[in-house]
Length: 115
Length: 116
Image 1 (tube, rainbow over the protein chains, first blue to last red):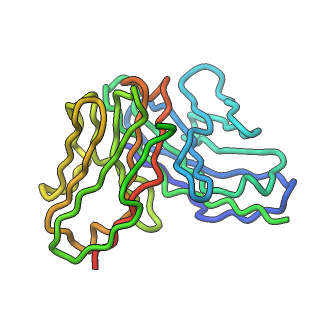
Image 2 (cartoon, chains in turn yellow, red):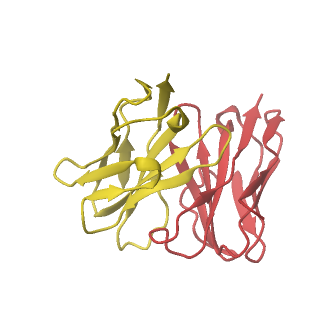
Image 3 (cartoon, helix red, strand yellow):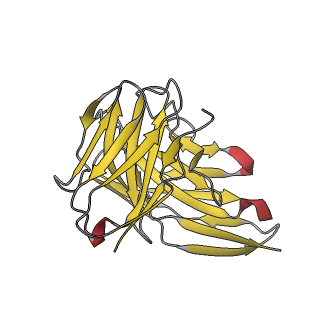
């Protein structure tokens, strides 16, 4: 079984400031890692994913995340946020090579970018 | 259509009534998933369809919950004898292939179910 913890339910930040949204996971097997974003009044969409290879992955809209196996973390970062980044962000994991298709999601972090 | 469509967008029902939630996936997407999100919590997996078969139903919380899919199209999630703890946003997602690793999930806007 897996679990995903997003410790920060809300993160307020000023426009053009850097931001880090934290994600930690636990799993008895290897995992793939994802970040999804939900803009106001829209469905969730994939922001980025880590499957293998380089531990630093880049996604849409200038976001990036780094997989740290020893710390079981996959934190999301952006060096300079915009008002339009205001949204809810979900970290998710899935099992590798078990055939199970379901994603396990964290409870989400609401990013509020203020002018 | 352009995206995953779910109906109704909001549903208020009395405890003990049955409800049916509908999902229209993106045309051509063979995989379809149902999740639910209770207030302040993460998304909980309910069931996964590949075509019209459901190889993973492990997330359905009780036998009051059932789902079906006709062909590679519409899916309905039925909750019988609704309870207050069923109140949540029910999300549907579809993807182009079996592999969620290479084909991202496309989510609908969800159905907000409130059981009074």
